[in-house]
Image (tube, rainbow, N blue to C red; front, side):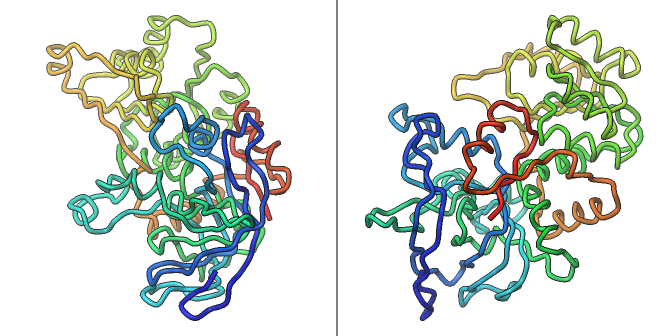
Length: 384
């Protein structure tokens, strides 16, 4: 890496040269390119793993799935310390502890007026990224995945992805634990707080008790929601949801969709929830949420559907009900403000992330990826 007159740095990265299931992820020596004025070099402490990493890193590129290409460095839930800072960057200095999140253009009508997670070029900026590394064989390697590519010991980060947490009195051990705040945990909690604006009069149903769903459970408890209904087919996840604040849990493993609809309605005053948050993107489950919610409810999709997934609505009854079905990205978080709020919740014992995570050494990345794919660990964190 050459940083506006700086020195070249060779580091290590988990490079994806093809699908993980084909054994194409490997630790490699890499050299970082020269940074731009609006970029920051970060030395990573840790990175969470998200299902989006598996989507983009365990799919053959020949299938033509958008956002899938190789070679590249993935990872988008990083924490670490700023090492070098571009000339146009303000708000962060070398040595500052940082958490990393998504990036955005800052120029489109959405970025100027609304939550930047709905930036009109979000896909190009976050899923496609741009070259940032060179391999030992001289090949160019894609980086800046979600503005960061946190599966590297040193990485080039968009300044928009950086959340400076200097002054929050966080140790290196704290940064390890808090690494996943920048995506999944922010998405789940932010959907409750910022998107749904849930409160004491709300009954909230949450479909899928992974990291996103469990973060939503904790946030709903913190918001004082009168009913918090966790829905999953894995009992251990439901037990965890109960311990984190769910007032009701429903195991769908042996349920029909009509039975699910009836059970959720019963748990929410017999009328159905006022808010339903979907992390599954499974069309039959989304359709069930449209059905089981009460009049004027919000059905919020945060799971990413497959390209062939569609939802059918009966237009007349949907109009009469006054329900809203819409998508939300990253919990509408303005990260420099919202992530410190989550950290305060954690410090206050109201966002116990430690109940969701398991740590792995980066050299043991294969184990971390496998437990993520199998669902046996809610949030694996890889540590340097």
